Amino acid sequence: MRQHDSEDFTPRSRRRRPRFDDVNPVRGGRLTQDERNRLARMREDDYAEPEIPGGGDRYSTWDSAEHGPHPRPAWVVTDLAAVDTELGVLKTGKEAEVHLVRRGLPDGSRECLLAAKRYRSSEHRQFHRDSGYLEGRRMRRSRENRAMAQRSSFGRNLIAEQWAVAEFAALSRLWTIGVPVPYPVQRDGTELLLEFVGDPDGTAAPRLAQLRPGPAELEDLWFQTLGALDVLASEGLAHGDLSAYNLLVHDGRIVLIDLPQVVDVVANPSGTEYLTRDVRNIAAWFTARGLQVEAADLAIDLRKRAGLT
Image 1 (cartoon, one colour):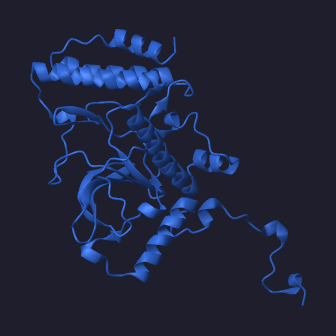
Image 2 (cartoon, helix red, strand yellow):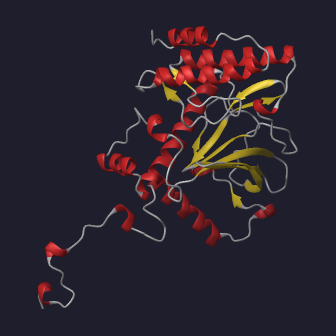
């Protein structure tokens, strides 16, 4: 019997092309290839070895991940026999959550604490102010660019992965040139494993906004922040969302965090505005605590440093 004689035959004119969101409506859209591979590995691990040695939650994902830059710090545990143990949530946000993870060998001979930053994807409709930051970042395929622009489920998954890729690349680059950022250990899909900035007992370093420094400490922290801004500008970059809430202070040293939106001030049409806003926001915090800062002059100097004037 010919196909068009079948009871289930649907005329071509009545057929509906599948949409991105129709691929799997229960899961909320098609995953990116990296995410499919990562989830497949997790499922395989669950079936192959339900009992993780040492009470861990999963085996180390080092073997399948993108690794951080060299020279690699000696404290990074790269043993494939290592296991990861979840110790709790450090921070929740609209775009990502940060968890505390201990990675170590089951016998306890080697271990380190890591901050696991996990970007949310299709279950969240938007990324915070993402349209401006994504200027200058394009995917290779026009279909993927359309999905991101339309914020389909597939597009939101792509955006989540793009944020993770962008932050990992930025941290790797900045750590290499000496900017005070956490060492980026690895990226696996939309999960980043970063150096934990805090004490060995798992107490995270406070944010600058939580501190009430005296005059001498305030001046020292400002000069550290100014140095970091100067190096960023010399590389043609701006943090993009700098404030006292994404600067950590550990043992008296400033550490920049939350860099998924790092901006190439030359390629991004709004690059100058982002750089100027970074300076204005952080200078306002120091000025409010008694330090005299000329934000306008500093912004001019940094724009020159970045080659914008």
